[in-house]
Image (cartoon, rainbow, N blue to C red; front, side):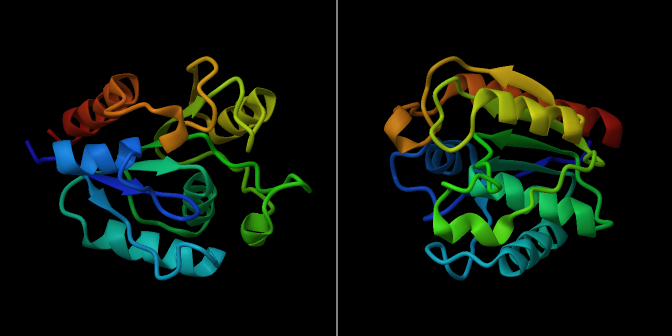
Length: 183
């Protein structure tokens, strides 16, 4: 059975030392998709970096995207033919909202085509960057299962999730599905 590669895909500003993605990289061996410019994102550049990382990764790949990276994954999925085992899409920033940060507007319109891989959208009831209703719309359009984790904010460092075992269990679910399909 081939090992599953788990790639973390941070959003705007990357994920700092207290972010659950960083904890997963340090504790579980996940690999980070690096962007050239974390503060001034360009959609085509971020999609290209994601594509290169998926292409270079061994075995089946599960993506773990947060915030703006969810839009990156949706744009990538609309343009690639590369296989992907699955994606955990956490706190997807609503890039179509007028009041959204100017840095993310280049990622609008959010692609709403069905994703060609297994996916789970994780949403919080009080996320300042996406309403729960909008996260439900994304999940429905993408063919993703929606997991409502309650009132945890943007599911970032400020949420103080640490190793975030609930999220890690969802990643393991996607990885197990990928490993089962590969065998």
